[in-house]
Each structure stands twice: as C-alpha cells, then as structure tokens.
Amino acid sequence: MKNDYSMMIDGHAVAGENTPFSVINPATAEALAECPAASLEQLDLAVDAAEKAFITWQKTSHTDRQAMLHKIADKLEEHAAELANIITSEQGKPQALAQMEVGGAVAWTRYTADLEIPVEVIEDSPNKRIELHRKPLGVVGSILPWNWPLMIAVWHIMPALRSGNTIVVKPSSMTPFNTMRLVELINEVVPAGVANIVTGEGGLGRAMSGHKKIRKIVFTGSTPTGQNIMRNAADNLKRLTLELGGNDAAIVLPGTDVKSIAQGVFQTAFLNMGQTCAALKRLYVHESIYDELSQELIAIAQQQTVGDGATPGVTFGPVQNKDQYDLVNELIADAKASGGVVHPSAVVPEGAGYFIAPTIVTNVTDGMRVVDEEQFGPVLPLIKYSDIDDAVARANASENGLGGSVWGADINQAQEIASQLECGTAWINGHAEVLPHAPFGGCKMSGFGVEFGQEGLLEYTVPQLLNINR
Ligand code: NAD
Image (tube, rainbow, N blue to C red; front, top):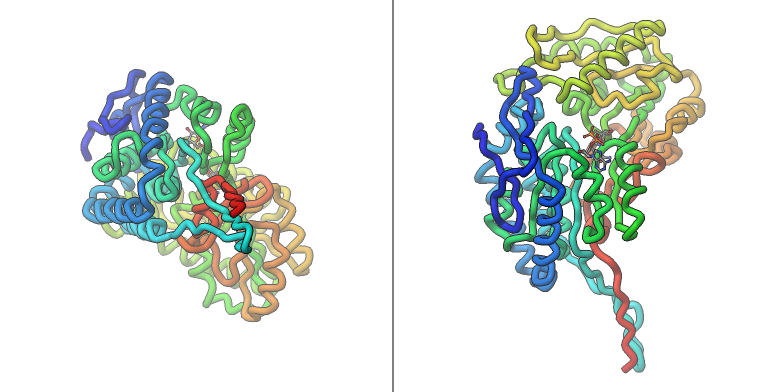
C-alpha cells in the first residue's frame, strides 16, 4: 500500500497543515501509514471550492451527470483490487468481504446514476400550470464512520453529485485511505471543486456541521455524534440525513426449522464482525427451540477462521479499533458476571491484533449491558421468551429503531408481528439486507431521513414550485 495519500481540494492533491496522524492496521495494532490532517482554514478552502464549483455543476445536464457517474463506476471497477486491499489493511475485514464492499460501491454508483429526478405536474388546466421541480441544495458535507468506509462514502457522494450538489467529505480517521483514493478517482472524472476531501479530527466534523456555507450534512455514525451535529446545524437550518446507531432485535417464532435459519441468523448478526449498523444484535428465541438454535449458532461460530483479513482462508477479521475491542470485551465480561454463559468459539491468533472470536452468549436477558447496549462487535446475546407479545414489547423497549426481524415458517404470522416492530426496516426470514432501490433509514434514536432509491435521492434536493398563470 502506498504511503502518500493526499486530501483533494479544488481538484488538487494537498498536504494537511496540521500534524499528520497514524492509521492503525487492526490485525497487527501497528501503524499502517501516516494520514494528512487538515486545518480549519483548509476546510474553509474546500467548502469555498465546492461552493464555486456548484455554480456550474448544478447546471450540467442529467445525461452528463449520469455519464460521469458511470465513468466513476468504471474507474472503481478498474481499481477494485487496490481498493479492496486498502479496505482490508485499515478496516480489517477479510479480503472477500472487502471485495464485496467494492462491488457494492460500483453497483450503488451505477444504480444512482440511472435514477431520474422527475418534474411533477400538480395542475395543468387552461389558465394554470403548476409544476414541482427539485433543485440541488448546494454544498453537501459528508461525515463518515469506519465500518463500511468505501460503501458508505459512495452512499453519500453519488446521490449528492447525481442531483447536482457539490461535496466535501470527511472520512473517519480510523479508515481514511480508501475514501481518499475514491475521491482521487472521482476527481479524474468531475470538474475541480465538485468533490473535495479533508481528513483529520481537531473539530473538523464539528466545524462542518456548523459551517454557514454547507447546506446539508449527511452523517452515518453514532447517535451521540448525530445529536451534536443536529444541535450544531441549527444556525443555517441545514438539511440533515442522520443514519445513527441501532440495536436491532430479531424474534424467532416457535415451530421454526432451526437448521434452515441458523446460517442466515449467524451471517446477519456477525456481518463485518458485527460492526454493521443494521446487524442483528439481540436474538429473542422461543423457549421451545432455544437450546437447539443456540447449539447450531455455537457450532457455526466455532467453524470460523479468525485472523488477519489479508490472509487467504480467513473468514473472520479483527475488530476495527482498540476502543471497540475494549468495549466488546467489557460487554462479554459483564454478561459473564451477570450469570450469562459465554460459549467457547473459534481460536484467536496470538499477537497484538484486535481479535475477538464470534461469541454466542446464552442465559442472558434484558437489563444486561450486552442486550441493552449496541455492541457493534462480534457478540450475540440469545434471549429466551415464552410469549410472543412479550417478545415484541421487549424488542420495542429500545431507544433505537433501525432494523428488526421476525423468523418463522408462517409468513403471514411473521409479517403481522414484523409490522409491530418500531424500526425503519423489518425483515422476515432475513436481516441487515440493504439494496440500492429500497429506501433505508431509522426511526427513534436511530436517526431520520432515508438513503437509496428515488426517496433517498430526493433528500439531496429542495422542492421549488412553479406556479404559471398562462
Ligand atoms: P462516530 O459517531 O464516533 O464517528 C463518525 C464520524 O463523526 C467520524 O468521522 C468522526 O470524526 C465524526 N465526528 C466525531 N465527533 C463529531 C462532532 N462533534 N461533529 C461532527 N462530526 C463528528 O461513529 P463511528 O464510531 O465511526 O461509527 C460507529 C457507529 O455508527 C455505530 O453506532 C453504528 O451503529 C453507526 N452506524 C450507523 C449506520 C446507519 O446507517 N444507521 C451505518 C453505519 C454505522
């Protein structure tokens, strides 16, 4: 991996004015490379460049912007191996999953390119025509997390550009390099100033959310940070899309064929080592099948090969950073101390990497930290229930409302229960599946606004009504 990633401001590769910082490879806990750190003045330069570029970019035709997005997707495909390698080395996920992330980024770019922004005719009578148009907002600020760094960057950037906005991106300081490379590639296609990236901490995110010239913030990250952004965004009434934390519950109904769902439950709970906003995080299992499903999940956990994501054959990588590693270990220890049973899992490699094997915990219930808190890591609590209404009430007793699911053989019954869950997406016999054409977002403390599909695209626009008296 190269060691000279640059920020991009107004079409130029620039170094940071603040002291660079190390990005850690979570598989070794050693520094991977140094990342530039922007000053607040450099953030202003990036916003100014984006504001200037907006004057002409907003007037480019839909066809031109669609063509440019497809050209960007071509570039992502050309550089797929390089991007996947960067993702594994800074984020930790196994190569196959990193390749999937790049594939997703390409698919989302192409899908977003092809979306249309229609003009709605509200009235068309002899004396009057009323049309609802959608105009871009201006400069959009994107603030990113560290779990799916490339894919989420694409989720923010592509709809912003497609609808005629310009953008300033700030990736997580844990995983900046893949996004820097992405923005570099985008700059090979779009005019200078349309897509800018600044890296570092030092209040950059806070300054972005308070910035007078930024019209919208799209943020994916934790709920407390989302709340800070919302407070800070009030001065110029910034538009916000907040994709925040989740603590998704799943309910497994009595009579479910345990063998047929075990892999699906495991994969959606431990997707990306559990570091997925809409991963399955609390599993409510009917008492009649509790032991059987526990055994199946423990067996799948034991079959994983834990190690450096760059090593062929590894199916389970490290947790991305030391804080998250400590938190997950703390939650496991707390569950144990409160009477939970922590089951032996796959072998963890020796060394300084942040490895935690996929961990199934039984004999736990609501009120314990491992159930009530978002673990955002490789531990899954299994909670026994006997009454379905009670399970629904417990599932809904969380402040979060991102996703939820019901697993069972009777689809009608499952659907009826799923519709009672307080969450943005309720899956039946599945979980954590996001698709470019299906609007996705949370309710309650998991945020507001949606991404993806037509509805997601329109969040990057402001309506303007044309009322024409003929
Ligand atoms: P985080 O909130 O700690 O950081 C996210 C970003 O916010 C980083 O780039 C950080 O530099 C920036 N930031 C920090 N303080 C800020 C401030 N005061 N103002 C503006 N920006 C600030 O989140 P994280 O730890 O990187 O990500 C994990 C969290 O993200 C989890 O809670 C997870 O559920 C959530 N997440 C949600 C979704 C979703 O779609 N709902 C998707 C992925 C992750």
